[in-house]
Image (cartoon, rainbow, N blue to C red; front, side, top):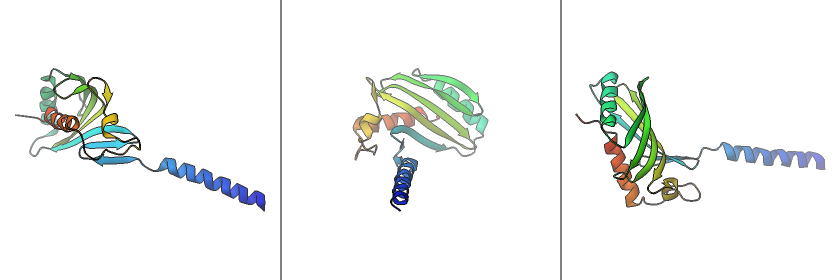
Length: 155
């Protein structure tokens, strides 16, 4: 009987460990999403009365004009990817981005965000428990606004 109880308790502890690791750790604050301690900036932009090929061309042209953006893929399956390199106006040392262009809209995601001089964004906006800090610093608010402007299409 004691053996059965010990086996049951052992299985119960194992189940608790497994279920604790399966729980999602995704949280969102403004345009920032944290998933298990990794931060991504995400914005969805709707553009009415504009077809996908026109959005792709306009976005590619807009990004190519910016000196701190290096496009890696161009117009492949309506996805643009690249790197933001040393952009002091944004306070960025480096980040990678992906723009998924859909029907009358596009979704921008910026990951691997490193702020100048070389600070991962996670250190500034996440607590040790991987939760967002109470209020973002002015540096983060400025970055948010600058990223929004960077990935806006202007005509």
